[in-house]
Length: 170
Image 1 (cartoon, one colour):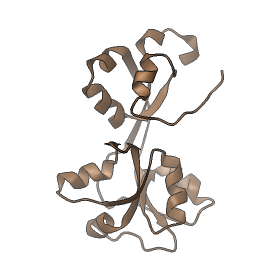
Image 2 (image 1 turned 120 degrees about the vertical axis):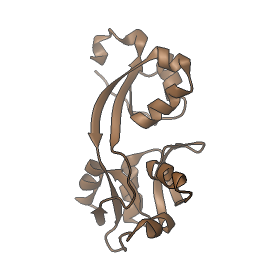
Image 3 (image 1 turned 30 degrees about the vertical axis):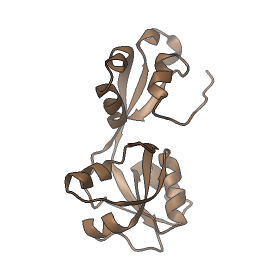
């Protein structure tokens, strides 16, 4: 087996159906959003649960930890966004429901780069707990509970239904 990792995009599900890529590992919220809007994707893709993990808030350890929701919403954020027009920020969905917004200074389509950004800026970020703890081994980060209630990260595997019997995807 050879593994080549590629950056996700809004077209990844279509590329999966076209068998240009074999497997997607994704937060369930993104997959649900894509499938909700497409009968073709619902019919052509299969999913299986991979892991569930809580989010934590990270800040540069020499910075000030967010004290509460108001401070948190107004601090500059490094946030996850799949694409410019397809944001998957879980904390922003919560704030939207409350009629508030957060200041997203930097957005990236990769969770693992967020700790690098935070360690060298005044931004804060929500990341999966394992990413935060791994990064804190070598970066000056403080880790705290999120000051906003965000659901756990639920990762799923996604593959094309036509490849369901493929032993390479077993």
